Length: 334
Image (cartoon, rainbow, N blue to C red):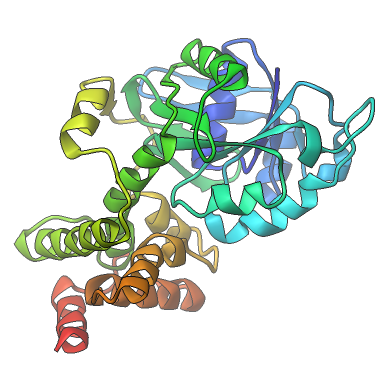
């Protein structure tokens, strides 16, 4: 298998880098300064144990790569970028006949639960991946993966359900490459559980690290709203106990030399000044389900709105106090 990593940021760079370091064939897809840095100097993958410089082939657009039978597309971008990239890759020809949409598996190595639906509209063979992978991408050409002893846990399964030979092969390659990769017939059950934990991403991006009673209380309120709307929608998710048992001590957050981990994916979007953020598909998923089932979700609504505002205005992450945020939520909830 050759792995085409569409989006070589924190998650994609770590997956692609570790696969390449373990001897697998990989192509990274990136753009702008990140593409230029990867093309000229390779990927710098920093871990708690090593700093690797990996000469991984890189392209900046689908037309720059000839697809082959047996290629695996791994989509590792934020959800707001998924449609454009799925459309760009779906119609690409595969050597020997047919298109990517008809022949090649696409793996959604992403947060949120919308990507698989978007992919299945365009691709015949879609796989979900629940990503537990602490990593940072703030400068071109460099990714820091702070998980140890494994870089991450990557549950994989066919979407909407099932397993199959392709999932087993991808899992086997990942497990030779510093990951645990359980193959599950109900991978979306794990992705919904991850969605609940990701409801704090916007809070962290807006106010900084989730510490102190006031911030922890807001996080609990956001997750309680999420749990209530999933229950109302009849959507099952993995329990906290199941998640803790799966993680164990396999992926512990460790310092990476020369790297300051300021926050998760949404915090990093603001820190890079990317102009967009994933909150419409994290907190916004809860807002949508709440409106669909008649359940108020004031915490998630405000977090979604403010995170988008911060991204549009390119405001610094962590630049609002928790007290000010709480006041805005309480006004909305009144």
